[in-house]
Image 1: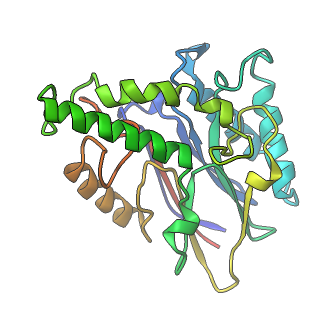
Image 2: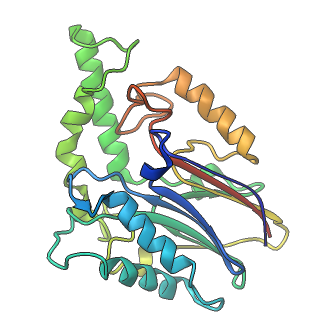
Length: 270
């Protein structure tokens, strides 16, 4: 397993605040995406997304070569739980999405929405998007459309006080209660509580595939190369800075930011 290229960039441009990371060992390769925290809770000087990412990163670095996906998920869960107050509610818990490639098992393990891609794989398979995020993004876009129609904002200029995100926070701030639960709005992430096995995607990599890309959802399109991924992102950022159309999501590119989210891209030769 060989690193072909890798890249990490925080949305603010400050690497100290970036909640995405890449881990590559002799046996495993992973991209970890700490979830943006809306609670305001701090862990020392760190936000919750960074705290969850760091816990998962430290565990992946130590995974034994023969670990199976569910033992790996349990290890990350325990690693984060050990760093959290057990009294936190589900919605208060920091969390991270993680996608891991196991060299020994030639499998991809996907917990959440960090995507993966290889030659011939449909994007709908490697880059899932949870229903609750689609609902929140659609609601935010509708609020912004209403505000624009009323003349209170201009879609030509992004403002820091995003009325769509403020309205969508009613859901965004509560959706953690559905994390690691079964149901139409349920989804997987590492948050220190058990992840239902049915929410862990285990994807065998075909024998004829010799390269694999793993990327956080800061990349709406995972290209065959980093340059292709960056080029596609740049086009979409220019077309949709409010992130209500091609980049439909729960947050825009705020003044002073380089993108709507942190991003990490890893391409490896198998």
